[in-house]
Length: 244
Image (tube, rainbow, N blue to C red; front, side, top):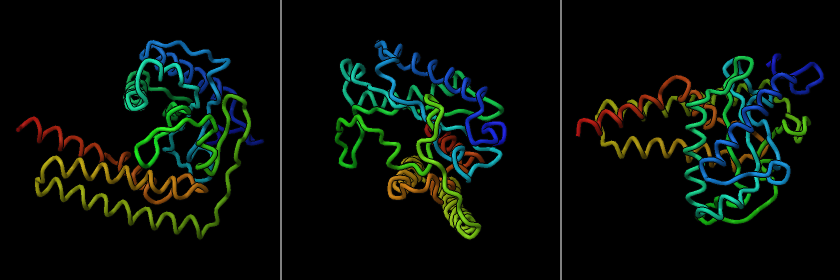
C-alpha cells in the first residue's frame, strides 16, 4: 500500500484524485439511472475509504472500498425505499463491470449509502442523516476532505495469527459445503441458500464487531471470491437452470 499512502499517512494525491474522479462518474451514473439530478454542494455528505486499505489487514490483492454518503431524498421522490435500495445495488455492480475503476493497480468498489433509507433488521426503513459508517468501521478516511475520521488500530501478532486461523477454518467449511452442493447435484435452491448464508454471516459479523473491519467470515468471503469459489456456485446455478 506504499503507493496508496504517503509517509505521513495521508492519501497519495494521485490516488485521491482518481478516487474522486470515479466517485463523481459513479454518482452521475446513479443520478441518470434514477432520472434525478444531485446538487453535490448540498447532497454529498462524504466520500470515504474503508476496509482493509485503511487498516493493517491489507494485502497485495486488497481492493479500495469507497463508500459514498448522500442525501438520497430526491431518489425517494421517484421510487420506494426498497426499489431505491435494490436498484442501487444492481447499478453498483453494473458500474464496476462497465467502468472497471482502478488506481495504482488496485480495483475500486463503490457503494452509495442511503442516508434516508437505512435498512433495519425488521425489514423496515428509517431516516437517519448521521453517518452510519462511523458506527461500524474500525478505520475510516475521508477522501472528500482528505483527513482521517477514525485511525486504524495496529493489532498484535497473536491477534493476527488468531484471525488467520479462524479465517482458514471458516473458508474450509464454505468450500466443503459448496463442493458438496455441486458434487451431489443438489437443487439450485440449496446453492442459493448457501450463498445467502455466506452473505448473512459476513453482514452479521460486521455489525456485531464495530471495532474490526474484517473478521473471519468477511475474510473467508473475500478469499472465496478471489479463488473463484463463489463464481463456481454461480455457474452451477446457471448451468443447472439452463438444462432444466
